[in-house]
Amino acid sequence: MWFQDEARVGQQNTSTRIWAEKGTRPRVVKQQQFESAYLFGAVCPAKDIGVALVLPVANTEAMRLHLTEISKAISKGRHGLVIVDQAAWHTTHCLEIPANITLLKLPPASPELNPVERIWEKLREDSLANRCFKNFNDIVESCCEAWNVFVNKKNNIKSLCSRCWAVLTS
Image (cartoon, rainbow, N blue to C red):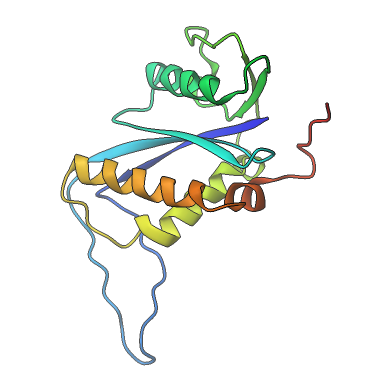
């Protein structure tokens, strides 16, 4: 079972809380440029693995590319259930779905059911918020680095994304 989602990361970035000396007012730079990228991420909490792509757009073709990468991560001879929200590029009949994947759509307007949303919070909190990006390539490199640091830490995915209601038995 996989959970999938995407997040926009760009120069119009998230501001989060920061440490500051009591009585001071810390400043955070806010960019005015509009370059951005989309981080497509999917995780399998049971196996503690994740797959991601950083792409310039979020559309059907981008989703197809991501599903292809997820498909490669599914063990040979197994079938993956990929849980997605109801973004237009997830629900279109034009989306080519690999043979070893079935999509399960979450109810509309229910981001709390998708644990990948927690990963976006964590990545922003740890490394993507309160910063300036030079250009598109800097955004891509920062997203890749943040994702790789997160997924390469043992049990990060399992501890943040496991849900008692989402357990498959053999």
